[in-house]
Length: 312
Ligand code: RIB
Ligand code: CA
Image (cartoon, helix red, strand yellow):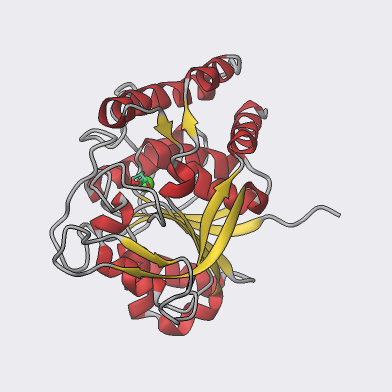
């Protein structure tokens, strides 16, 4: 008897790696995308919302509704990410601008309606700053039981940042939102830099991708080439598969190992502002509030990604 697909809401800021996560979620029989909500982060909200719809049109998934959310963080000015260029999907100018309609509801209200209507609790998969999720929790606390769990890309336990020392971009961009989410009491899995920076697209993976001779694989190749070039320029390593790994951990939870820990967000006006501070040894005496991803099967991830891309 096959396992029924996991219903998810994908909250994202596409973004090249968000785009790969959307493609993988749509192609996986283990996932049912109930909707996509967009937030600012890798690019402005206008761009991330355009990009989410451009990607869905590209993959023939215009039946998936898209609702736009927060155009700035809860309590501070927007600091845009730099890994994807101003368009949010630089390197693919030939991808047409979106024509599919945008859901008229704000992302927060779209999430609420979707959770109310879903026959079972829904898994939230945020792969951008947590502004929409935090606002949803503030506005609709009564709907928390309709959330099965949250599997988010963000933070780090030990790994230094790839953007600003001691932080990871999704958390750094809206740390107050992250604090609200981590303190929500929900079942949260944090797929952070400790594991995503071990899943890097390099030449062997590009060679494997090139063997999947389909239009989609060629577009994914373009996205990843641009992304890898930026990553190598900034950090001297290949492109980290941040968001695709978070999504993959919903498809196959065995791809990551986790450690339960109390994780707090540094909101002090220090150089560590926006850092996720994990109490690895439980010294604070506070209850663990996060399953922190601490190990990863990188080869298993790429097997899954290429299998999904190669599917007819
Ligand atoms: O730090 C990596 C995260 O920041 C990813 O979600 C990437 O898309 C950017 O949003
Ligand atoms: Ca992202």
